[in-house]
Image (spheres, rainbow, N blue to C red):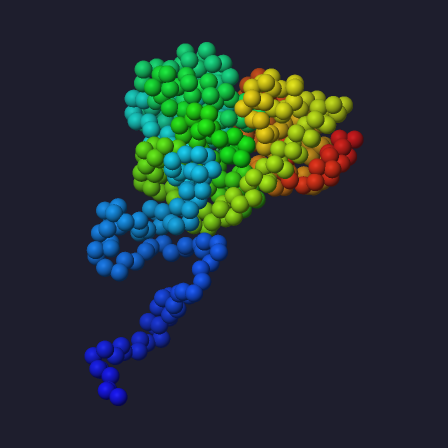
Length: 397
Ligand code: PLP
């Protein structure tokens, strides 16, 4: 036996050094985890400068630093692009971060954006208060009035932004017609599809160029993950990613991972949400204690025919109802259907637009829009519909 070359012998590191390094490089090799692990590392290492250079130059896929992206975010982005039938996706720390990146990726000072006046309150505030400070012109229109939308275009209009089903009264936006209007004038259409998700409606398949989501809603589905996504053409997504990374709006690896777990049941959940909401709307529309029900699957809905055309497989779980005394109704439900100002959980929840999403509007404006003190937005969950109907009947009795 030849004696070991003493120059190859590594000195035994001290416990302090070992504590920093111990275990890190002992990876199992005979098997891989079925589900992608959570990559919590905030930085990635390279074996040599050539590999670093190949990664930096984009010749090889590589991760560098958490803010620039994690494997979990990339997996979620690929999944969302596939589900929406688009080239690419960019995930963000929240729905608002995603919408901001989508807008700022496309718009520069001197450009003009048209938006539906019904958009989510914080989107409305972003458009009303922030974009004009950057020199971007904004017009608010009633997107149900196609003539008004057409008249709002200017030579510098770059983007038309709408939601496909609106909050809280579930008006149905004619995405194919709006896409035609925008494209004929050289503009893009972006659609916030948070209220339905791709198992119910895929805006890009109806002409939208950009799709946005709050991932905290149907895509993750359990009120346990937070994030946003912009989805669309690869060139538009690289513009959105550039802005998002510079603004620092990266999704966390954990939230991306949690959203991926939620996505696995999206199809099943959405069938249950849609079926339950339709059944409850059908029953409550004839209930003597319910003043009015808003659901696109009811013949009383002003856009019933358009809704049938665009949503052949249901509308998801969102509806609204007006009762005489919303407070009494919420109390009588005694938390079985809790009051919670979000939506799209597997658990049914109610929200009160008068005191939450629309509270900043003067009362007269709220009433003009159909937002009354008795209006409740109902995010119908996936519980057994027999139980839900029983609880609603008791609360209304
Ligand atoms: N768009 C819609 C339709 C929403 O309802 C919300 C939030 O409720 C958002 C965007 C904003 O998403 P986030 O809360 O993830 O920033």
